[in-house]
Length: 427
Ligand code: GLV
Ligand code: MN
Ligand code: MN
View 1 (cartoon, rainbow, N blue to C red):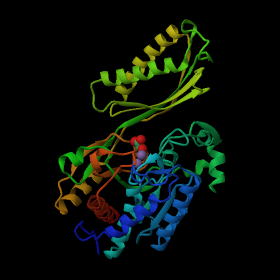
View 2 (cartoon, rainbow, N blue to C red; view 1 turned 180 degrees about the vertical axis):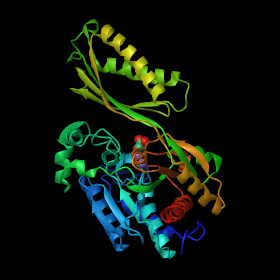
View 3 (cartoon, helix red, strand yellow; view 1 turned 60 degrees about the vertical axis):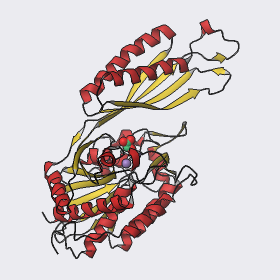
View 4 (spheres, rainbow, N blue to C red; view 1 turned 60 degrees about the horizontal axis):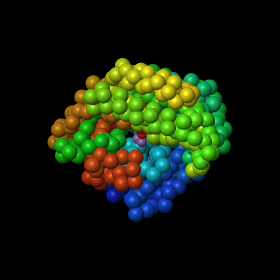
């Protein structure tokens, strides 16, 4: 069979949902009244067990396996012309602390089910079709998101990457070089890089992580661009002392200075008036961290994003002016270090058109939309034409245990993905 349309592709929704549930079981958090909280930090025993489980599923489907030195894993269904650039799909299975069970996993297990469905349809693809599990899309452990896809696309210097320090629950730990070696991923990170044109097309299926599809009652979004993320670390150093004895006029409290800095970030982001400008300070490490001790040092991590990198930089400039004022007034030292400042990605008009066509064939009018969340696709776009398929998630909730996507939407997303992969693989 050639070019199956979305109606001809049959997704085994029961199996796909069952496997999403099973994957959610690889977590260091017990299910609670809050919902199925999932915490699966890269290269922890839970992550490694989940990888082994996934690998078995893929091998059972007859896919070949390649694992690179950072743990990106490539499951391939060989096409009739295996030397042609393959068509690829994929996402991540790592999960931030107390996350839900759909972020990333829908793209990985949905991608696997899409391949199974294409096999069942009798398709004999011209190009190979590959499912890729990307390492550490989440920045939780190494402070920078999309580690695997940054290295694939040459966006992160491999030597520098190996020196990144892991930090779990605020404690400094080993470097990436040490952590990945202990997890069984050895060899130079420079070998992870893939050349421009390595893939004919890259398509990622993901939950929207925002409310627009659900609000509009629309089942499918096609992403046309991904907003540009940036990350900064601020260290604020003041003077510690006894919480009772150090008099207020004599204080140089690092946490009070940090509080002003956080509010400055919020103020200048809101002042842009742009819905696409967002900024979050999501971690705050206080030293020495005792209730009766004036904080002498604070480290903050800032995540700031925009569809317009110039506007994002404008916010940072305004924040830096406030930093000067805080420094002087509070007599503290404030240092800023850049973690990453990425450009936005534009999706391939051709893949968007293919996805439109597949949706129309299935009787669906898809919504074209921007992704404000980042994804590995942001970096895969640097080596291949890229697009993404979004499905709704309840109330737009994500990065929370109550994240939820409806079975019918997951199944439809996998069906659209399968059909698109089939078409792209015939090109
Ligand atoms: C991805 O997890 C993001 O933070 O956008
Ligand atoms: Mn996420
Ligand atoms: Mn994700």
